[in-house]
Image 1: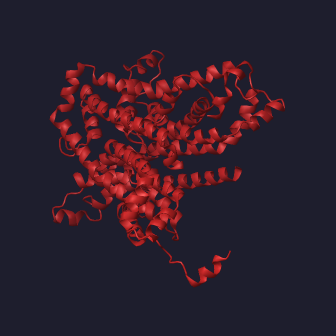
Image 2: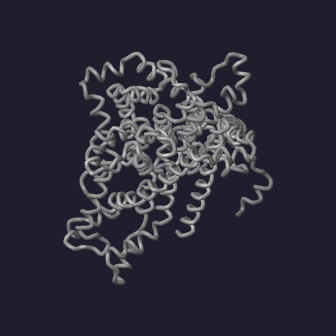
Image 3: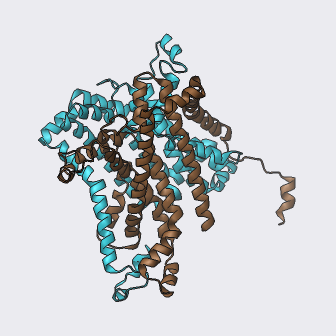
Length: 281
Length: 292
């Protein structure tokens, strides 16, 4: 390039555009004071208990039961969301039927509906005298005010994550590979289960991981339907609130730290899934 | 959409190898519709049914009742402070990250997204640990009679935290895609920084910005868990709309609870409609990553 000589004589200034110091300075200040310092307060608080004290605070039967409930039900909800998320995405991307675009918009309802609204609606719906609860109670099934209520709420809140993660990936997946599989004699079911699903696995797992992370931390939509019986249907975030109300700041912070640590692990796992997906492309 | 073209009338007589058999189509569509109807639509229908269970007059009385109006006012006030703050932050962060190169950029983007992966209750808890009676600054604040928790500042802080990334995460990929050529041209031609932003950058990002603000605002008005921890639940004073719903519901005032819930649900539906409209009409001008 002939411009090389010119570049040497006229070194380009590092930034032509103004506002770098101002915008980055404000960003760092805002981020540090509103997010990082308060999060540091959470991480440092349980130190006042010492390692033994921290362990005692989170290993009481009630705390362990709440963590088991939050994590277990979020895991189950993520699996349900992954299965139905796949079916819904498949239908949305591959089929044509009336009302499809409306169906597409409705998927985001759990994002758009405030959690407290969803919470009282689900609770009323699944209560023994509710529209769904009254049908189930005839068969001896109780959902509201049991751990299964927690599962329903977490499934509700997690569904958009699996659909919205899978949707762009499935849209971009060409039909050629499926045609090849069909040409080689695979039945349609074999093609879907042994060719399509494995190719979509990174996206399915990413969506499920996001649904799981959301479910573990979910509060508003769960507490109304859960019944909140200690050690039975009491989720971990609610136990934090209870401990705060008893002025047990360190105990609340200990559970908070466990949940924050999980968030970090989930973030790392999601990044790992992304790079796995990128490699397979 | 590529599949839609394939379904043209001429091709319809043949079952392509990539077409599912009819029974499978019907089965899957029925499963998808059934699941969505029961899980997502029934709760929405129930909210409006219960809100109007005793007629329109009862609904109107419930939402114009003194404490409900106070809750609406407080929610609007908290959002009116938190949303502009996060909008300014989002623009500043996107400007720094998209238009300049500096070390640690990827890490900074991850940190900005952090509040999304934190439980709402933990989001409130961290401010209690800083400003609460036993918190870092608790003693100083009581000495000077400054109220942060159980008052508007605490509610605003919690709202800012949970809505922190909305505008930034919409603008960062969008402005990175657009590069800095246009802004550099404007700057070279002598435009001031502010003029460059207002007349070159802003027209390019306006729909993405609107999209981010829309989602930020909806979450700010609807946030429950984080605000619940810092608000103190004082009826008529520190109860936002979602907290007021909880209070009414726990007092067995179902019409009242669902009336306020219907207001929030309507807000959610309007947000959803505008969001779908923006995604459909301005798909190219929104960030590629917005469908997450």
